[in-house]
Length: 190
Image (cartoon, rainbow, N blue to C red):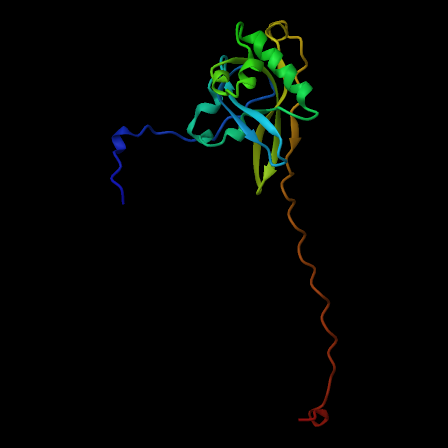
């Protein structure tokens, strides 16, 4: 058994991980890498965290270590999604004067994206997984700094797909008793 320095441990009551409600947030890209999706398409995946406000650093806690899927966005680099990627890159360039995201992609460089500011419109989704209520956020849109400051967006409603608590099952119904037949001892074959 390990020796725990109890005097160095701060007592807490837990409380779990807080959720990030639907809304627009100023975020910062914390990681970027080129990947190939399961369908074989090229993409740039950016991992982000909230950069200011009440939820600043929301994804920096130990709970989110190794869970980049909870706060990332794919910028598809081929196929029908190129138009959406172009919009995201335009919003990113507007938020970071002097940064040319298309030039970085053309040079196969993901690192220049790290540290850049982006304004994201997020939608919270609540769901039940393995009997426990969970929460995730999805990127709905990338906003320009002007749209963000002017409030020129509609905050999406939170999606609630949680399963209701299972209702208590009804009490089992007893089968009626089998009819009894009265036989005399001499009628038994054994």
